[in-house]
Amino acid sequence: MIEVSGLLRELILALTAEPIDYALGGRVEQIAALILAELAAARIVPIQIPCPRDRRLQAICTAILDRPGLQRGIEDWGSEVGASARTLIRLFQSELGLNYRQWVQQVRLADAVCRLSMGVPVARIAADLGYRSASSFSAMFHRALGAPPQRYLQSVPGAPET
Image 1 (cartoon, rainbow, N blue to C red):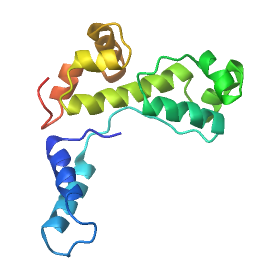
Image 2: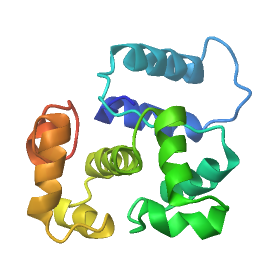
Image 3: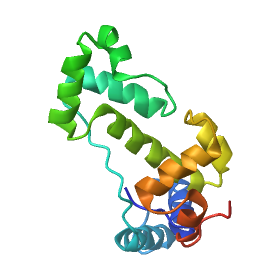
Image 4: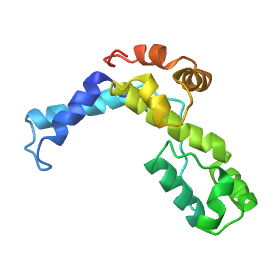
């Protein structure tokens, strides 16, 4: 995952407004070249969300990616995907190298960073992700990424103020 600067975000939006087939040497080609340059310079965020091969894990992971604030433990998925909690625990570790809670946290961090960069307030993100308070969310964010959400976002050039 990378941090998307304000410039990169605007370039991407500008490119999506253009036709897929564009003339070489024009404005759209320059936008695409700038996007590539910004991508090369973008800071990598220490968030990894590995994707599973096992169909049971795929069902779980897809549901969580669709709704990062979903509040379900590994035990809750067993009957839905046709596997015991112990099997799912083993599969998460062997296929993804993370336990279930770690994987869910990575999804939530990725969602939070994205939403923070769009200017969504920390309290709203915390509530949407199922945290009891903005401070508990901020503490988790700080432990995982080394800075609270407001300070972390300030280190991203062009990011909106929170």
